[in-house]
Length: 140
Image 1: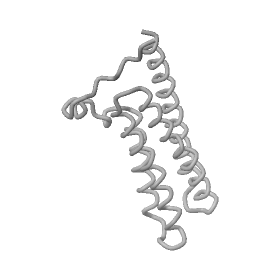
Image 2 (image 1 turned 30 degrees about the horizontal axis):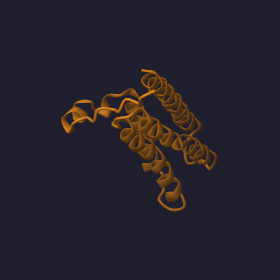
Image 3 (image 1 turned 90 degrees about the horizontal axis):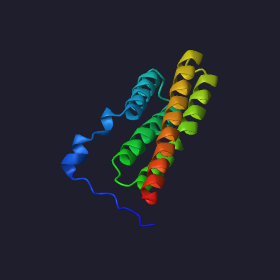
Image 4 (image 1 turned 180 degrees about the horizontal axis):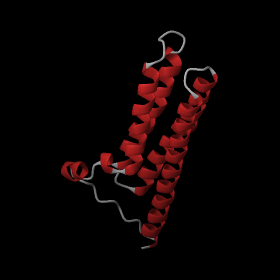
């Protein structure tokens, strides 16, 4: 079967199709803002690395997802989505450490973990949908 190449989008088309309008990016961005707000309260001594790692994981997810969302082909999108998923368990692990060390409250940790789980589910949904679309294109 002949594979159909994705039509490259122009800069204007990419700008019109803005990743910031998508729910997964909005939810990820909300997590970033929540984590930055929470870690602002932490004293900047031994917690600095933990705060930086938490912020890195949250920003890493949204940045990787934003890159993936503007890719042209389904295969490239899937690779990007899969790359973004590595930040989910990292985020969950770091927030549990912060909770156990007393840097955040259990309710703050639960909120971040719930949001991270939601991002994971949304991401796996995008991966599944993209695989279906890729298969449908191959069958044409």
